[in-house]
Amino acid sequence: MPELIFTQQLKRFADAPTIRTDAATLRLALEAAFEGNERLRAYILDEQGRLRPHVAVFIDGARLKSRTQLDVALGPDSAVHVLQALSGG
Image 1 (spheres, rainbow, N blue to C red):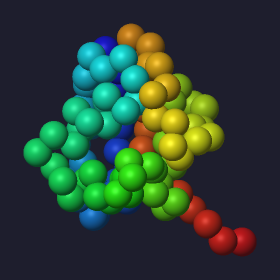
Image 2 (image 1 turned 90 degrees about the vertical axis):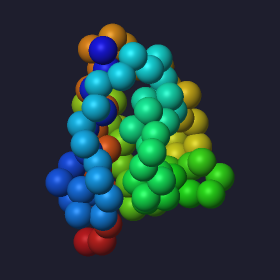
Image 3 (image 1 turned 60 degrees about the vertical axis):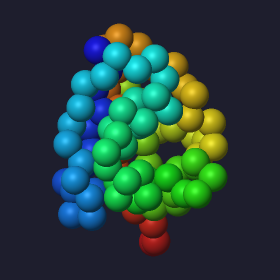
Image 4 (image 1 turned 120 degrees about the vertical axis):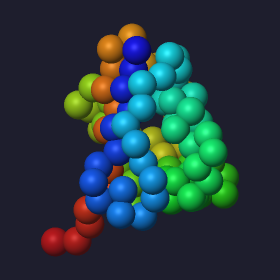
């Protein structure tokens, strides 16, 4: 069952517990995490359902390249890490 892990930095802004879900895609896993948690949804996704620029997602250690294509397949043992993206030099 895929696991969705939010880093401590995100937990400062919204309730973001680690969850296990039977979701087949990243989008469905995120929707499971957002259920009853609109504050987390608003922090992670913009009004068009895209990842916000300050959020990075890694699936099984590989960074998600697209902010708009969230229908990425998850394996039965996938680990999805959602974290605050760093910027600057």
